[in-house]
Image 1 (tube, helix red, strand yellow):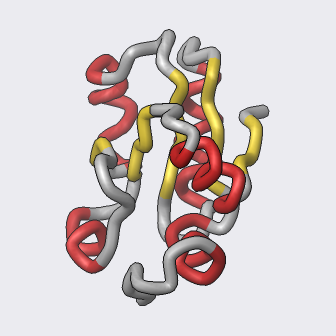
Image 2 (cartoon, one colour):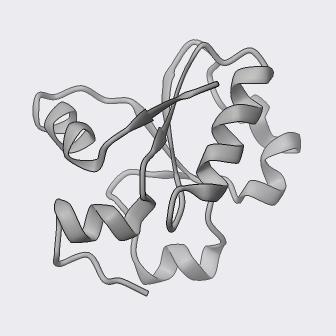
Length: 106
């Protein structure tokens, strides 16, 4: 089972210059409302056919609204052979509450 990453932990890692791939699996309409900078966007429903666009050796942090779809994405990627996969606990909702209150909530 993929690991879970707390929003503040991810923010600290990004601030240290670490650069995991931020994979946002929400729908395009959701991404238009708010997104973390530099995300790779592959909606969950397209992930099975588009996962080859991702590097299996890269560290991936899966992101969605509340952390449920991204947990599914992370589990799928881990089963597909991706070795370093995390789920952002609480998704962009929790990120907005704990890290960046300027990020719109919906």
